Amino acid sequence: MRLRAAVIALFVLVFAQALPAAEPAPAAPSAGAQAAALFDEYWEWVLREYPDFATLFFGEHRYDDRLRDESPAAVRARNAAFARFADRAARIDATQLTPQERVSLRVLRFRLDHTFEINRLHGALPSGAFDSWAPVTQMSGIHLDLPQLGQAARFRSVADYEMWLKRLDAVPASVANLIARMQAAHDAGWMPSRVAVGRVPQQLDAQLVADPRRSPEYEPFKRFAADIAPADRERLARAAERVIADKVVPAFRSLKAFYETAYLPGAVEQRSASSLPAGPAYYRPGSTGTPRRT
Image (cartoon, helix red, strand yellow):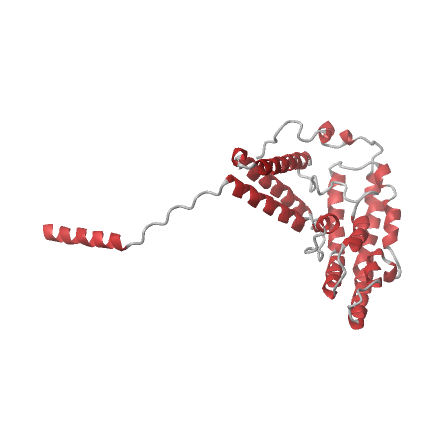
């Protein structure tokens, strides 16, 4: 028995020595590395989720082939993502950062905290700080943004024009989702003043053209780059006429019908945002300090 035990002990010892040494646990990322990763991820997320902002305000053309996802589900997902980014920012130890990193983190925390606070005021409504509860007004909306996107997008190559065609192809889904969100806001009592929306139907008339070539969205096809072949010019122009006639114009026609029959009649006379369901708190997001996230 003793000999057997000794043999077993020797076998265990030899086997243990043959095993590779355990790898040391990786060190936790430094506060600076955490901040850099957060800054990069947040910025890329914003560009990806808000491709219209990317084109119009930042000259970023990677997402020129798409419109913002206006669906209620996408808006709620973005609101949840803002809260997660805010949580990550709050967990970074600012005392371990360089002065420049601390300033950047402080700015981002302020932005994210206030965004969260504004989003929270909307409750279950599919809207938020950057996805308005009144997404189509006389001052803003897809009917005004789309022509501006056509001016800001890059049109240097065939690929650029094909990206624009994909963006136009997305208009019907975008409009349908905007209508769904405006209907949800209407049902929940979130309605703008009549003075802010009364002229929208007339503005929409600019999109309801009988000839697609008179559409604001057709403008890029009137000025092709010199090195685009004639055959490509013809193909692209014909594709633009089809998508405008078959998708863009009908989508805006449906938006005008919704506006005239359902949305505009529900507009209110009051001009104060305190009359909204959120009440006076709508004027002071973030005034209660750092918001509690649950």
